[in-house]
Length: 201
Image (cartoon, rainbow, N blue to C red; front, side, top):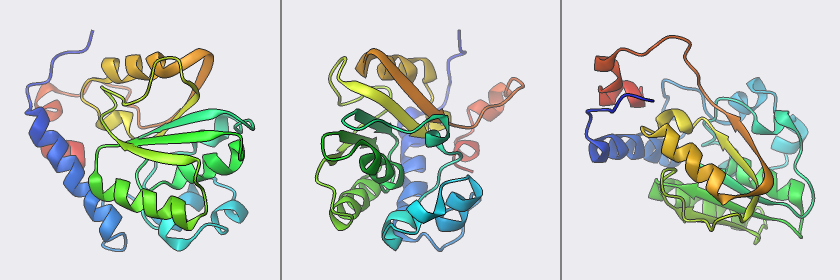
């Protein structure tokens, strides 16, 4: 059982939102993490697919891996992208599931949601939607999703057990998760776990 964090959850979420608002609005600013097309190439995304996307879809991508490396999605599947950012993975997912499929992106940062919705319209996808919410309380119905994807977001979630329980709740029986994220192999000291600045970089 995870130890309870002593940090202020509202303060943490605001700090994370502020960081990713900057990624949405000023992707060329320079961050402690990589973003955009060079990052997608470094993480092994097929560049013929990435290069076919509008620049605004790619420029704010800030993942840590490639959830599609675990396998392609199937035509007609319903996909939830948890922590969908500016819509990069959600739009790639939409192209895989096709016109009979559907993608629901969830993010807690209004600036990212605004950009993601504009990006989906720009890419011509009307079967992808973006909803505001937290991974610990997903705005998605029980047993309604074939695949959960996520890219570098569970590590930013204080209550990981609740977030994974929510992901399990929305999955249909036999559904699957394809998650890329950051893992640590040693226990993080309590003072570090409760330092907001270390969560955001």
